Image (cartoon, rainbow over all chains, first blue to last red; front, side, top):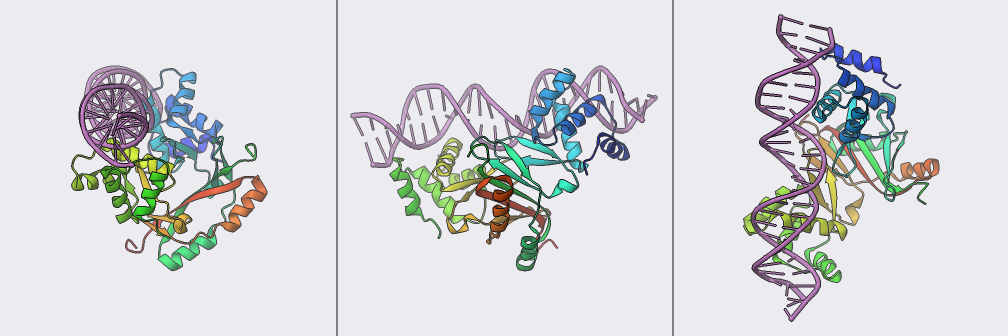
Length: 143
Length: 143
DNA sequence: TTATCTGCAAAATCTTTGCACTTGG
DNA sequence: CCAAGTGCAAAGATTTTGCAGATAA
């Protein structure tokens, strides 16, 4: 189930955060690029096109806020910048397929790690709350 | 099979890189902390204790070189700094268990992703070369 | 000897912080 | 109104680069 604009705004209001034009722009950008894993700078560039007065600081502060509220998740793909992804309930457990040739990041929707997680609990006494799995390889287009 | 000091030096020599005292120090530090996932700065601090003249620049350049030679692997656990791990043949496919309370990173030695990788090849036509899997949760000590 | 390596200082990135001004509710 | 939010500029943190001098082979 995709979280929509109103649902995110309600989450903000419920925690006594204000709905500002800047926050609206950022949320819209995130929703319109659900599949993209945008970095702060990419979001900044897009936001500038909508309203040139938006500052980088606000981008970072809003992204941090949305992470705190559980709306977003931070990701790192090794290019030195943090990337962000909407924390869609259904999609919560998916994996990233990163092409070593073109760098494109696509997603694989199925989890299929339950057996492994159970084994880890049993062998290491480590209780798993979440996971991140990245596969590196060659995508269909690059083969 | 753990790669030893001589094996790493041979790799360097084979590619016409020199064995300098600084590189020896760094390699020793890595070998003596196989289980630790050290950052560049941590390696720098340790190296300074052995020879106070070692520069941060050399640490970064040597680590980059060792990554290029396949001796090391870069890792990121979300604390803003790159960490490094010896690329031990046998251990190649293990997973990281990151405790959300104390931050400790331990390893789980078994891979168990073959079935999932096969499914991804079949469904996405994406040929997997490598993977990185992190589990976030609560470790035995913190429970 | 000489191509490679090193340390320093400076630059380049990415991200955070202090502060005075603005604004949503 | 006023607590919360914003933009700017400056500071922080991590990593990279230019360069002149040092050194392994």
